[in-house]
Length: 357
Figure 1: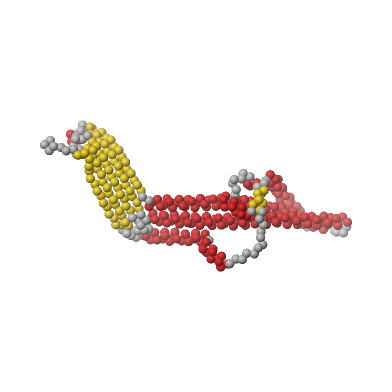
Figure 2: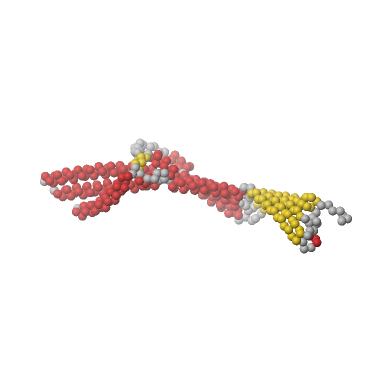
């Protein structure tokens, strides 16, 4: 009994030092009274896991736009201006110093469709002015319009790489959205558990303190009876051990309250308060003992239809299935059909020369 009492006293001394230090640091704290609804709202707004999951959903949504950009029309403009002067090295140049000004204005419109069809329309226009006497047109306008189209018949027919990237991006956004819903549900569940654990720990502290008072009363009565000679001194030692055990229970319960409160603070994470971690959370809601009837079959059906984890699995299976079809399509031989049309012609100020010259 003496060894056990000594061990309890040493343990209480160490734990007591920690508790006293914690209580001294907590003297300058403020109370934050929260209902369960308010606690959940704070977690939904500030929880870091939810914030990260929400941003990931937005990123996946932007990836859809990036993938769809491959199927949007593409306009290409080629604008060039060239002014050159070249000394003549023979009489066929037509000028002592040949000067040419070339202006190029080319525009191309191209697009790939979801079936794999590729087409482009190009308008080419070149303007040439020179001081050569041998030029028939000055300035010379050389214009052309061309159109091309190509349609895959085997490989890339409806399952081209661009379409595959769009489908994968869409499923990635759906998967991220279901993952976000699952993360929200997990955080709400963890907040509710931590909230009621804190309520239970506070109730447990009340019970531990009441038990300590009863043990102290028993020790006081035993000491009185030893003084009057109606009880042996060993009974006082047993009462001291019981008081020490109750004090240990109180200290451990306080520590459990602090740990549970820290867990709840990590979940709700209020960054707007500078002294948030020095604030004491006090739950104001109390548990209810009202009976709740649960229809097991209806609950199972609802879970099968609405659980985000199942939706994630369905989305992943859909992505894998599409990748299989795309890979099988890419194993086909290449076979395309296409056509092109072009119109071209020069124009400008034509220089008419007399045949007798």
